[in-house]
Length: 296
Figure 1: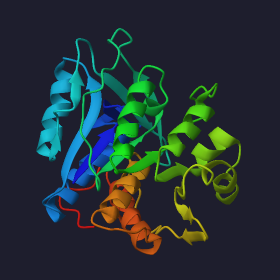
Figure 2: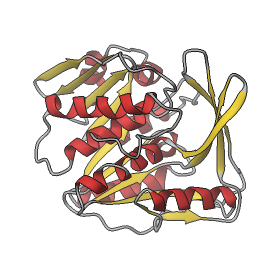
Figure 3: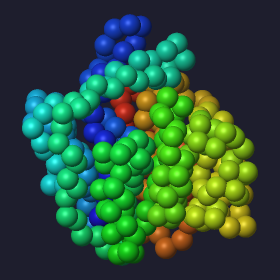
């Protein structure tokens, strides 16, 4: 089986106390794929990973692709174009939560999505601004539609923040939900999009009509999951020392996908604890992905 990640790739420069402390390849979907490269490809030898994104022809792109290959992710679907790759400043506050500033080359040519084949049993992860950005939305949608038609499981991470322009984003997000088998949104996401952090209400009104399965994460608070006739809440272990919250949600996604591999049903009582373990490992370090020796 193949797991495909579709999303933006950046170089994250992480600041603590006003000083840069690390520079690592990042991006919401990218972080999840790296963690899967460090876990799924070892546990399940028949799993292949590939990342779909656009990067420049600079040293940053070289860093990203070498890092991908070292972590078991195919670079064949990475589109390299003339120009500069994206860079972000991830600035940690006193609570280890990050705010971001992005630097993108606006002169890059339009994203030309590669021709990819999908199969039944494959998994596709997509989301964030890359899935609603006018410059990439149509291309992402076409890939996801092709995957859905082939019988792949589609996982959508809303990952929408108040600093994004809403405009017609709500409609685009709901169109993405309709293409998906599982949707995850944080409490901040759903409040920014629908004006409510009540996960049960949001599921009933805005997600269930389009997609059966919804996960709402709330940081260190409980995770809520909804499926037809099911509403469950899972506490989060708060014993881990938090070094950085960068990648916590991304790695929750990785944990869900890891738990789905080889499964023909969705058992939240088995899946969510695995996802929590992925997140707990990530917040205990400055990096965006699980440790190389992490055991789910």
